[in-house]
Length: 582
Ligand code: ATP
Ligand code: MG
Image (cartoon, rainbow, N blue to C red; front, side):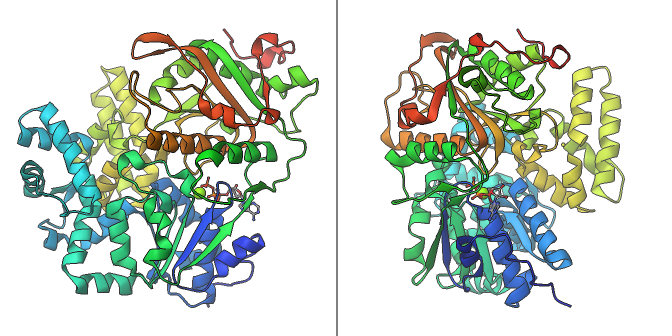
């Protein structure tokens, strides 16, 4: 019995429904933040499988982070039950890993090849180049080679020596995971054709952030007339510094003659104040002409966006801690000015709140203020999981630990490691913690330890964010992509911080356009309440200097904002629920 189609398209609005039901063939879905792209993508895939007879094993869905992939799979399981099992839902790196494991011999690798994490790659590069500094320079050049999909430029002998050295050790690096499959498939058209027959239906989320190598891989896997669905928002393209190029999104229709394009314009995430502010903020640099985006969520009388200028970054951080205290008490800073309890009947908890910043260094001040005030938090960056304390030691231990299932091995190894390190409390805790944020990944890998170790090398720390923990999330703007929170504090809205510039460097219009998109991404993470704060004076790289407001603030219509000032606070939360405020 096939999966039931009843209800598959329920809960979609007419635009989303049209996108989900659109016939096979190249389709571009251009949609702003909060318009339900993931919801629509999920239903489109489910509809193809349940209604149009697409065999699930023919379906490939690619997302940007592993966490997004896990979420997508979960939703597909809800819709399709066991029929979702044969679907391939993965990231570009995960896809590359799958292809390479199948084609390892052609790439000069054994079946059990490993993925070098950033530290290992640097070790190998430093050996080849003669010093750590030269190794770093080599890796920077190596990244430039990979984003061009390989082979386009002058050969770089040192980079070639580095790659040869990796192969000798049966290793690939991150860039290889996409670049090697691109090479194998372009060298052998029959092989590419075989993969195209295997995955006849391909979908990609966050298409605005693909880079050259990923684009090349997609082209090889889908072909110009293939059934490919690309979803994204050019105004949320924020990975140019990593080689992503929004140009690939913008030329989708040229690449796929006859492609259809649909737009989604209803924002279900945020209230009208936030949506209108975000639309105004992106307008001066928007890559989506005539963008329509309007709030349709059930938010009555939304509060204005709170703006706050603090004396310095420490005062700014304590403003955030105090505002959180007020919100937990069911009032807000707004209520102090407007005279009404602005709680909208909602019960807020720490998990509903998030602090966003441009650079990780800004988290320091926030963390000290939160520690002092007793605000629990979880900080996540887009850094590699393998860079976290304890993870590498644990990974080294696993092959020596007995056990059928990877999860059993992880548990045993973490325990053994913690015991061995018990003299060093910090290291022992790190080992134990690493064993716990890793168990879900281990379970997903069943008994395949090689796959687990490869996935471990690939995972981003943000993948491990626990949405159920009752903690405030501290995130860089990059790491916040795709996420949503009832309350958002965007700190450091200053010229030089957001838009970011190295102190003393020139303005670069293209870089600044991307910074505006980051600002847009930040604003559109908020569902109900948004605060934009800045410091009048900030210490950066050890020296304090006056800080001017971000030029982006001027794009937010004044009528949508109101100054909030915790100093004028009159009402306090009941004593027993008070945080330890400075
Ligand atoms: P982003 O660009 O930030 O990634 P997105 O377009 O992927 O945003 P989603 O995260 O899929 O948006 O959806 C935003 C929110 O709106 C989610 O909470 C989702 O459940 C909700 N939503 C989407 N479509 C509908 C709908 N038709 N009815 C009710 N809620 C919806
Ligand atoms: Mg999304």
